[in-house]
Length: 450
Image 1 (cartoon, rainbow, N blue to C red):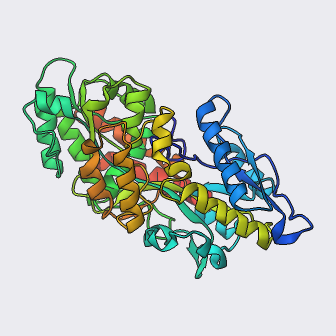
Image 2 (image 1 turned 90 degrees about the vertical axis):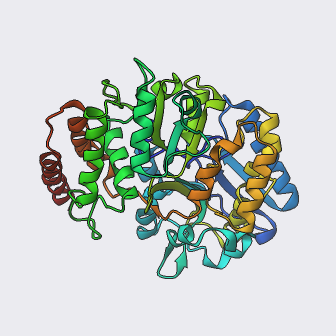
Image 3 (image 1 turned 90 degrees about the horizontal axis):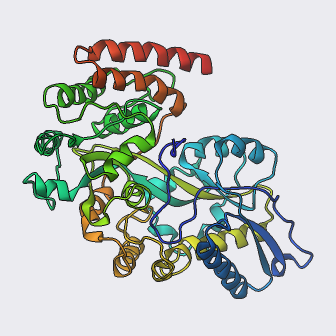
């Protein structure tokens, strides 16, 4: 599954950085103090992406020219974030001066003292006050700041505009409620054999992952606030499964094929025969670039009736072994490469020129602040994708509260796969029994985890 810790985060921004890598320990400051400082930064694009790598190297050179005495050394481990090696490398002191941490790891990294308190350096990020307060709060502990939000996504409803038109639906007014989703799905499925109104996963941890998206949207939770007990056997959880059961067996709008791994639904969406699915903006990019979908056919809108949205993302952190001079230089690099309109990863004109897809709104850490509006204006001006197809998502994402994945997410997703598979594979499946069984297994797993 591509999103082994949630959703894959960064595509279609032109020149985005993905999650962190490692390979070199932080470099000590040279004898000249602030005037001569060396930092290591994650993560340089791979040699297999020569245009992106060239753009990165150009940015490094421009940064060093603007900051005399600062030397920037890049690491290019790909993928930059590997959940199997991240923990050991971080604990072993092998991480760069500037590294990236996924949202699911924020609390652990901060609690274990593996990120520097950067409170005194936040002024180095010129647009700091434009970053969404709820995302800054995720990186704040006891009044101290430990990271700079870099990427944020929230889940919406990805839909095939061409199928909407073919089914007599208005693609410019996509569904806002689950009742409307259900009606649209029936009409799309009614187009004939092979058409699926609404696609959903049933296994490979993707079923439980999408269950989490759906229950969050309805205002429910996976775990209790203390994280010690399952909370999904609830009215919201039952509504998720009952709705899927009814769409599958009453409306016959979900097809008969069980979709397990991440690629299965993406391939189906790319075939042009699936009307709707849950997903973040990167789904649109992947469907087009990896699964041969027609870019003009796809849109994304806000999550139906959203009370919250499963969110993910990443933040840049500074190695706690960094000297004050390294910390300052690292924060200035973060500001230059990742937080300046028209520069670095937000140089959309350059991104378009080297052939990167530009237009999907996959970075919302600035919301509708002045910086956020300026970024969207630049993205639209340099778009290579049909940005008007994503506007309703942009409008919704700015207001829907984010909610992170639960602790032990992958174990919980595997347990919830069974419930998702149950309602999609058995007409006589009992929603109550499926959730009760999943609750028992989840509580046992949580107890074993301590």
